[in-house]
Length: 531
Image (cartoon, rainbow, N blue to C red):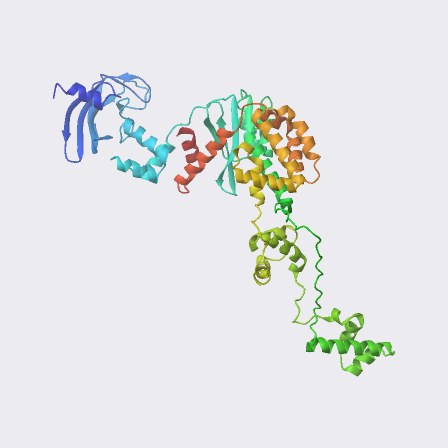
């Protein structure tokens, strides 16, 4: 035992000094290590004075890291010293072994550090399962308490800071994350996304030189008031994303150009005469009776009879006679149940028929489109019209036209990155629509500015984009860029961006899912900053 004791002490107590190993007892499930401290004196935690006067001793049993799948328990004999300072309120105190124990601790420092690392990586339930796997039995609440007990990280003043929002509760509660763009480390989490909170945080750190943000108004206001000396840089990804949304709206506005033009055969074409069909069926008993009444009423009125006299002679109501007298032809009186009565979708049926011929067979999509045009009713009436009427109509022969989203994706993609099939379809679409051709030119010009960092060309691009009359979404996008022109030009000129901030937002989402709804702000903040 004397020969292997130095090696065991180095193995078991490498992080602690002046610890003497007395014995090691190994059973089927537990490794018991008996040790004692060898220091001659210790410092009082109350007054800081050192004392070597021993009052007594007792055993502590902190758990250590498992060894070969077995639980390790350290039977550590510690001493209680008498504080010799008369003004100190403490009379006695217990010595602590640095690197091995702490006050009221039931685990060694290395086991505690391992559990903290597991808790920061996996949180409560998953962390408890992982700890139980390597032999450290612990509950999920204990792991969360370990995270909460960690000290606050040291405050730093970055030179380049990125700011963005994240959803604590989607659609209801939003908060702010701040990241040091140079070191790619999160600095702080703010409890809301208000401009005043961000301005106060930035005002406490006057050394900030660059603020990377999106074009949200509350971040713009907060950065302007809190760090007036800093240069604000708009994120290029958000600019490109906003341009993509505007491009998709422009393509959708010109969706009639997405279907290829039909090729007509050579030779003179005869125009098909529209079939004229009266809503009054010939020989229908209601139709014939209405025609006879209409002729009788108009004959009596032409003979000089008053409307009340005609009503008495024919045994009809006065309102009915007045309705017959106002109708110049019997067809105007056709309101019976054998004819389709006027309904609210009637004004939108030509549009629905055209969209059906264009290849859109989704009733929900058709309802969404006419709702944007002012259709007041619900989805069921459109669904019934599609089932009863449009299902029986033949669709145009040929391939289905591409969707507006697909065409917008082709326009936003570099031509060298498109597959041959998509490239051919894009060329066919642009050949049918000069407006989409102009849109593709503006998108490629903006992409060149983004990739080559040529922000000085932005005012010229905005002027040309606003001049396009048939692309209102692109004009509105250009108009919005003018409201934050200096920030956007800086974002298209300098190499800084908010990509690292977006990565930390996704990391926060992962932490929230791991914690199963228990991710309160303080606990989540500790995990984000310390993990």
